[in-house]
Image (cartoon, rainbow, N blue to C red; front, side, top):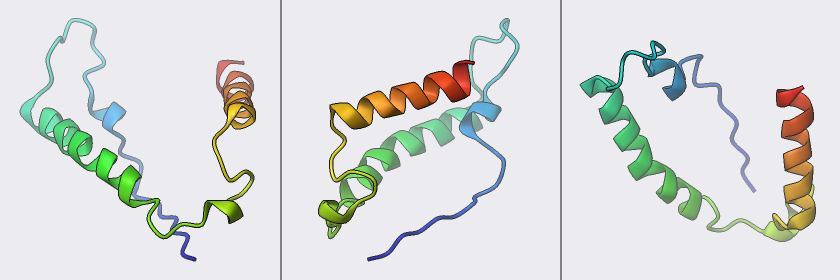
Length: 81
């Protein structure tokens, strides 16, 4: 079993977006990064589950209704309030 956690820095894709409402377009660098992520993320999610025993995942082996409700409540109390 391998669990990898890494801090890749403070730069987020969101921080690269123009925050001036008058700016309606992305620059080429930002657009290229977003397109790269859109190509890479689905593969990461699909390949990441290979050889992973979901029966020992914490706290639940499946993202079911209970997990979804917990996640939504967590977001509500820690990000909206």
